[in-house]
Image (cartoon, rainbow, N blue to C red; front, top):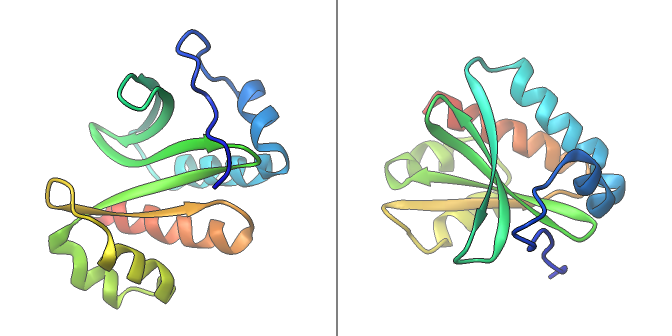
Length: 139
């Protein structure tokens, strides 16, 4: 796995810092944010430093509900979605690729939820993130 970035509590992330770490994945970042804001109302975002992991994480919210988390890692970023166990049938019947369905099915539960995460590499990942955002908004 790539080196985790943004671990200095005193340096709050901004676009320049993020883009200097994720490099050519900047376009994917911009596509995700554009899709999020263009297709949803009442969306907000926050950066927060978490002492337990010693890292800054980005959180996208709709009203007070978390849509997804982003962790910046060298040369890319990881988007993580958490879905309640009750949504398993919907996730399994969705048009998500089998590897993401398996990831959800095999994820260790936390507070009756399980995660799906994607390390952003290309347009296929972006298409899957759009599906996950839509699924999260719907539920």
